[in-house]
Amino acid sequence: MAPLNSAYRKAAFLTSAAAPDQFPPDSGFEAAFAGRSNAGKSSALNALCEHHGLARTSKTPGRTRLVNFFRLDAERRLADLPGYGYAKVPEAIKLQWVRLMEDYLGRRESLRGLILLADVRHPLKDLDWQMLDWSREYAMPTHLLLTKADKLKQGPAAKRLAAVRSELDGFDNVSVQLFSALRRKGLERLNQVLDGWLQWSEAAAAEAQKKIPDQHGGEVSGINLARSSS
Image 1 (cartoon, helix red, strand yellow):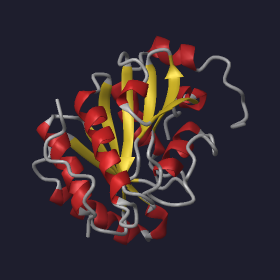
Image 2 (cartoon, rainbow, N blue to C red):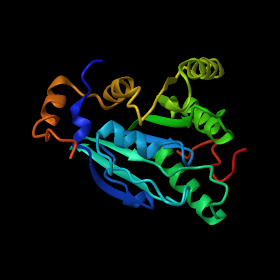
Image 3 (cartoon, helix red, strand yellow):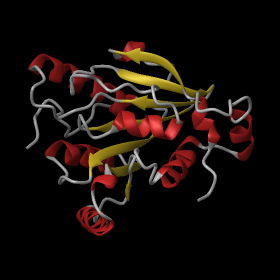
Image 4 (cartoon, rainbow, N blue to C red):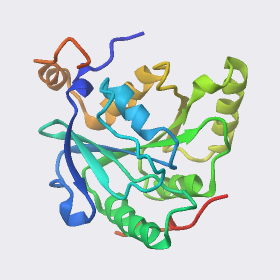
């Protein structure tokens, strides 16, 4: 396996935003992580950054209402978007999500790509497809992580990957891979995708890797995230 970009280990919490006016300045390069509640967003971010407590999992799935931003360097950030599709969330919270996601996904100029996460054991849901449809409409580069691949044997996992690739025929902006945060499977490919979006040059990557401790010590069209998926 090729060496992973150690720059992600420098990720540090920047801010949480409940409204667009709380977003960091819209400059530089940003990649966002999105997915249904319990799809494994926090685990994926923590595995990428080798920091167990960087992104925290809510004790009540679907209750996280904030966009959490993490700083990589002066020009690069990761964004953890609120989970969607949890049926028990009150309607008022769902509507708040819709407004926040519309503002972020539709107007964020520094957003260079979307990491969409879905549990490999289950079919893609309506809200996942709405996110994919939006990404295609706006030509947003999107990389789909089929998470929790460790829960399936190699054969069934490969079969699911092939099936999803077939379903995504016509989505030229979307790539897909198997991923397991627990076994750190798929991190190399995720690194490559993010490195491209965030435009890490060799010089920038080398600078970001300095002083890293050795120990891991426009409105969005067609998205209705308030609707519960089946």
